[in-house]
Image 1 (spheres, one colour):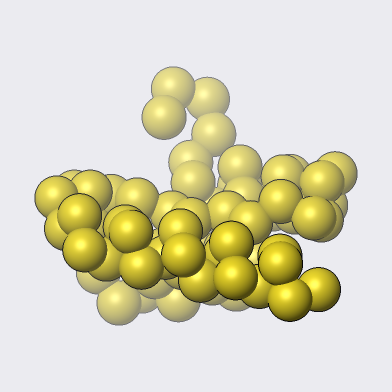
Image 2: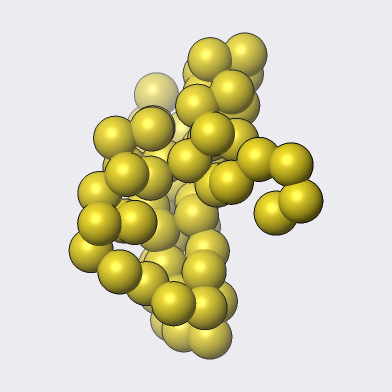
Length: 68
């Protein structure tokens, strides 16, 4: 990302819009990056090429919102 990375952006989104479910997506998923995204408030962090993981993450966020 040109100005902010995903972690910084997630922190801002979760602070200003706590009701928003953030799903981080990257072409290269590393454990430290996933941990940083989750610590920043992301609901999940998935590989951009893994459509099943993306779909599952969206479903989890949707189900959590509907259950609330």
